[in-house]
Structure formats: C-alpha cells, structure tokens
Image (tube, rainbow, N blue to C red):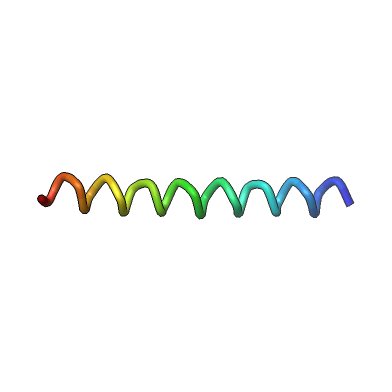
Length: 30
C-alpha cells in the first residue's frame, strides 16, 4: 500500500513537472 501511494505521488510529480516544462517552453517561445 505504501509503495502504491509513493508511486502514485511520483507519477503526479512527474506529470506536474512535464506540464510546467511545457508551459515554460511555450512562454519562452513567445
């Protein structure tokens, strides 16, 4: 159970990081 929650939080963090990178790249392109 602990491992499952850890992996879930890690996936959430990775998703957030990727979205942030996309946003920053778009802003830099403008």
